[in-house]
Length: 412
Image (cartoon, rainbow, N blue to C red; front, side, top):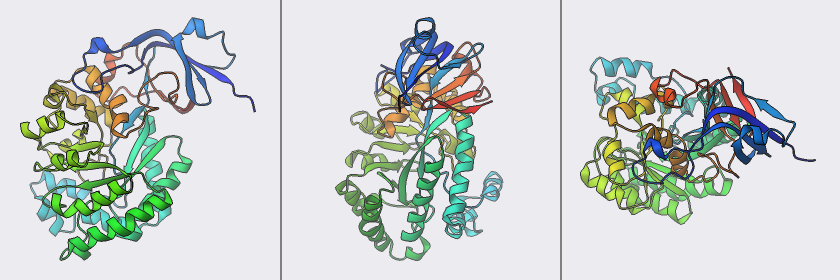
């Protein structure tokens, strides 16, 4: 079967997000903005980018863009928990009324409430929930979504979650990137012997996941109320031995997790709201990518990740939604990124890099996040003549078209 090429355009502005520095600050002047541009696509990948008039005679197949539009690379949400059962609206109300995390948990809320509902759900129920949430994200221009397990907290239920992610990925047009977060909190069944649970997930669960190809990434919540650095090491040691990419929930409430992330050469350290100058300096000296999760700050009413300090120290910075049923139920990446930019004084370039090319780096993916020859033809297309309007409207200017691998998957 002969492959055909398709021209998408013309775009008033096209931001490639290519050739930007991997680390440190980014000025808006460093953005490559191509005007009156088009993208030539073949087999789902970008074959050429350039002046629309020069490209339009190279193929008879066109996706014609009418009126002023700005094209970005398809957005990348590199940290979500969209596989879950149940609902935690009561937690939100109790938290805003002054109840503490422990008080909410004592009333049957908290993460354990989601664990209970997730355990009660079957694979089809979890899959349907993932699909529903992912379709919402696709309408927001997101074309790659990391999805964690971590609400099963048993061998059978963690496997069930990862299988549901795989089944959802088989029917969705976007790409789901599964991550095993079996080390989320300590299960109630192992409260008196958490070491036994760590042994279970390290030496039974991880080899099974690797053998079945259910995930290539492993995560752990390193915090006093979850897993200490010492307790979690056998799990991380085994993950490294089995060649999983490692990421860490780090420094959300207390510092310490980022040090462990660096020690294990983690791809990313996510949260970092409690990071001090000491942790920022440490991260700046290593390749672990900081991931800010402003949705959690908005949901919990706590400080934002010190994004400006991290960038000025020479770190990279990705931005993700942390979309989850408890602390970050909003799930709107652009709104969160724009608000973070306001509070942390981030340039448009830094915000957009954080949800495209640098977010792709945080997932260790090389063929998304920027528009260049050979990459997947993933696009978020906004009805405006100026890319600055996208962050200016703080998530209220939504894409009217999302394209994944050269095909329209959403059209308003």
